[in-house]
Image (cartoon, rainbow, N blue to C red):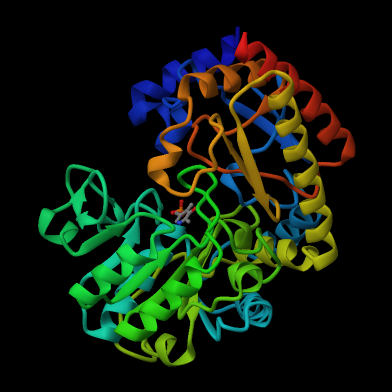
Length: 425
Ligand SMILES: *Cc1c(COP(=O)(O)O)cnc(C)c1O
């Protein structure tokens, strides 16, 4: 099976660590060999052995219009013929910055970068500069890219001092990273009162520890604690931005962050991310201010063109349509789990969804880890064998695109029902 994929993976492992350019692609979370992708169109991808999959990973979130969306391809085609990079401002950057600041009114100014990692790293630098404080708080299980300060998780139980979870991260730096359980405002309050924090950074809806929604009032509590203690509130919306609502977390939850990081959807499948927020803060960024941050390919015209085409297509009506289809798929999964007596909990927000193989609702990373990982692995492989691709890890969110029509949703519900039956057997 997958002979061409297997041959390419074998070559890849000799010249690339783990055979991949980013760890989760190696399928370590589910076992078995990863496939090598050949092409994508709409809701589907094909591997190099010509197996077809309905794709709910969508490049880990960016492709909200689906693969090879004509609007994006046309914009890229037109833009690339005028040159692919200049390292000088283009009008496309200004267009996209205006569009983002219009749709997200709390983002008064924006700086473009090339990855979510750069966006969060730079937002944290800005928060440290603006507050004159070094320590900050993140949540257990939240992923903010791979910059040193963020590669820290909590020890067991409640908040602990940071310990690095990758070799190479200096302990002295990790010690400035405080960690609290998601949805635990009192732990946050205790830490913020004990130590002056530059920032509280949070995925307003967690997508990197599985899909975990904030309890009502939790984000408002973070807002209040930040304001009371002089910390900045950073919403890391690299995954949720233009996904969970047209106006992101602010629209969905009614809470406004000081700084916001964006990525994934805003690049429409090209390397693009951004950070932005209050004008007085963003004016501290060089060259207007003294907080240094730069990038050779930042504001790349192809990325701008793909982002603009994507965001222009993404009307509130389209958002609502994708959300309705997401709800229908999630309802189908829940019904299948009930039929086959599988322990299961699932939910969605906008066009993002997630599920855990356990009966209790998940509120934080600790409870997420209580789900049945063995059952997930079997489900992943049964789904793959039936032509449905979900993330190869039990702790990732899933995504829907505008290209997933009713026919794809029906097919996915049917195949995943059978996959659940087989995984349970
Ligand atoms: C994907 C992601 C990042 C990192 O973005 P990259 O472009 O992979 O560097 C940061 N924060 C969140 C919430 C993400 O989902």
